[in-house]
Image 1: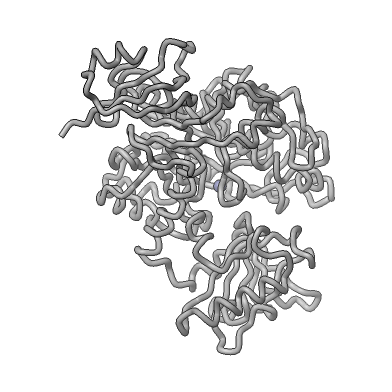
Image 2: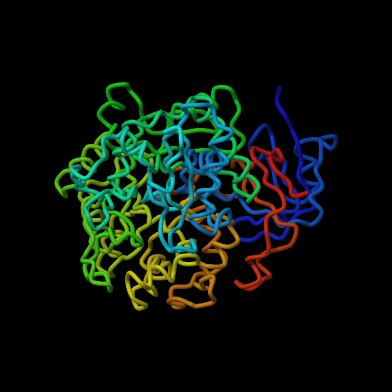
Length: 530
Ligand SMILES: [Zn+2]
């Protein structure tokens, strides 16, 4: 049965700002007519169901284009260790003991979110502190998933001891006697993945629904899953989205990347980018070029200011280039994580050598530091930068310790990118950054102010309209869907982010408190502020 409805009494933000558009008619999930209410009624019938939006301002649906969706859901399912949950190692130990009393015997306890810099002791818990009397295994991941700590039972299950060598792409933290403390950094985290029981299919679906509730309540109509943070997992995330898509149980639009290391298998199974349904599509192929700034593993052209070197690439350049080549040749959009300027430069060079041959251009995830010459290469090749203004807002102090003030001012140079012709797209990297509110990202893109009130590189500021384009029209173009998503016009999907008051009337500082009040997906209200 074809469904008709009209949304009216609102200020719809259209291309070219047409003040006459006070109503839109929706047939099924698409916009069929727009203009003054009378005109729209004349086109689709005066007796059509009409929703009064009471003077709201309506934008095309916002999308967050790099989220670890299952990690977000799982982070709300394990032992809560986020800075908003605990303030000390002692409290983490107490939370683990509480969870231990409730968990079925033998089940591994997992937790998420600890941030050593925000715990009273200024360090992670140790394996000894997390030991439980019945030898239950405990594994806690850090807020940014670059670190994890296992208790002695978990280390033993994984065979990690004083004689275990560090993997090439990570580190086993040791005490002065060479004994592992329990903490594993970057690639060393994978030593535990090999023995941890996998999440069940039901748990995967629950995680997606927890994330859906969260992102709808922030005003997002679309979210891109940036593949598992723990890259040792295989294709189970894509499978979970496909199951929910088949059951018609997805309440917003998802795209999921998959690991680039699976390209060969994907091709042999006939899996292609873009497969799925109206609420789920398989997106690009994700691979890591380098690490992170906080862990000093992002690959830089100039040393970290604390003398910890230049960072490192996560794989050989030739190996990475083969992956980009192979992916591009089989129509995959390559989504390469690169943070340091040297890593971004190398990746931009490979992407311009092997441009995308499918629907969507290549992307550089994070793209934290970019030299002027790299920006020119990216502009020439139409590469999409995928920054997170949330990092500038919430991690600026840590970045100053790593990079010094001058380089922090040059992080995510939106103005330079846009002036060079690049079209960056918005993302939060949630749950790595806990606050994924779109209005906070917009405010930070406009004001470049961190949560301590410092302003970083104000010359890189952008306008409100540009910050919104990063979540709407530019995001749609980055998926090759600019004819379907990201605009309010006839034929476009009826996804809307609605504000009771017009956020365009507010300064960057005020915007932080102006939240969306409705999220409309495919013409239906999927969430509404109470
Ligand atoms: Zn990420």
